[in-house]
Image 1 (cartoon, rainbow, N blue to C red):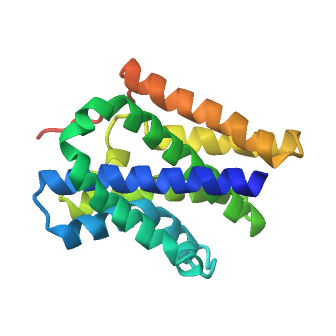
Image 2: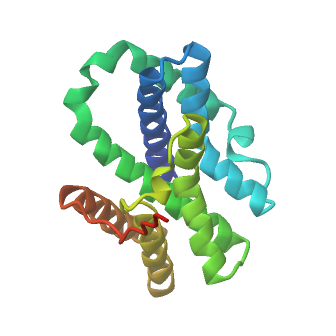
Image 3: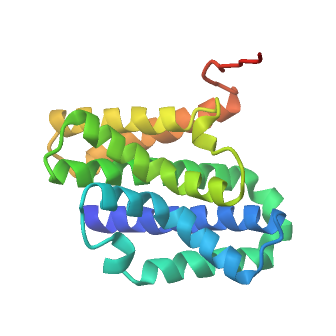
Length: 205
């Protein structure tokens, strides 16, 4: 049951991330190859960076070759419905929050199976949750969302902390996932709704 739940949520998450990347590709007038690759990199990039840093092989998309195809074609499918996407903004904010939380939890799990320290587990979760978006923004010549005042990395780190706490309190991976998701998604959506931000550093000579 847990495996099926994780797998289902993961597929939803990578599709949502690929589709949001495709919209950005459209704003920059990329060709079909660019749309396909940007969707793939955004959805799977964070996990790939984590696996390389932790020497955790094979990479998820190598072990499951269907993932690049799913994300790439999800990005291409977005082209056909792009003109209607503004009506689904709230849905995509929710799906993006799911993606951030699911990726973070999975990143923490990988580090925990390697018996790494608490700090490494939290960082592994944040890399998995956020670095795909960083790669997307870098490729699109934009300041990554992770480095702005919006609460994105903060949500990932907090979610990882909650997941770690749950893993020490309860011995049920389904409960750990549900509690972490409720916390992380609520935190992310509330931060958007009420415009919660971190203090900004502004320096001008």
